[in-house]
Length: 186
Image 1 (tube, helix red, strand yellow):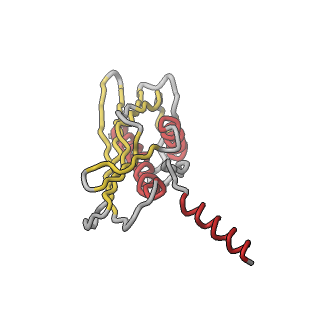
Image 2: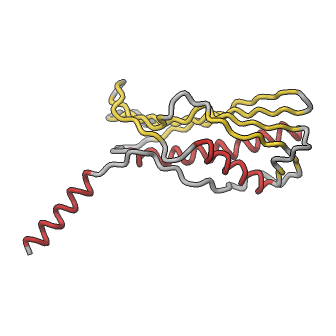
Image 3: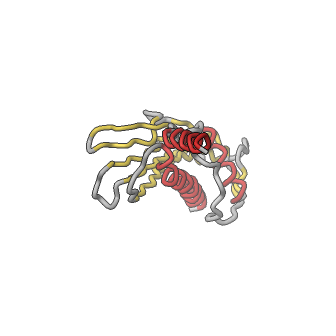
């Protein structure tokens, strides 16, 4: 009986000491917020132009306590997400004969959490995407920002950032496609 108790206690201590060191991002799921279109574009692709690969930051007052990267390649994730959304909305991408060229730049993905804060919005997330549309030689650039706030009583590791990062990134794709449709149709 003592051996079983010792084994259970050892497993409990081991599991309690493990921490997540990366913020997990789930694959993109189409939100079905944009109506079907009949648009042909030449989707050049996505560029990751962020200045830092650190996404999740935990602060202790004004001092950085911990920093965490994502578990994915941002360029690949966004490329796949946009391709799914284009397919869902019947936007034909990679049409070389199209007079509409689309580039997307990922400028920022960040979530910040302040420990021991009494503020009801102690977690803030920001995703900044730049949409560049060239139509008939005219360049039109749109800056799309998703800002979200949340209260979390306690975060121990990178897992605490996952819900707000996943939601912000999904929202940025859907909003970017909506703006793309409006700019092309309007």
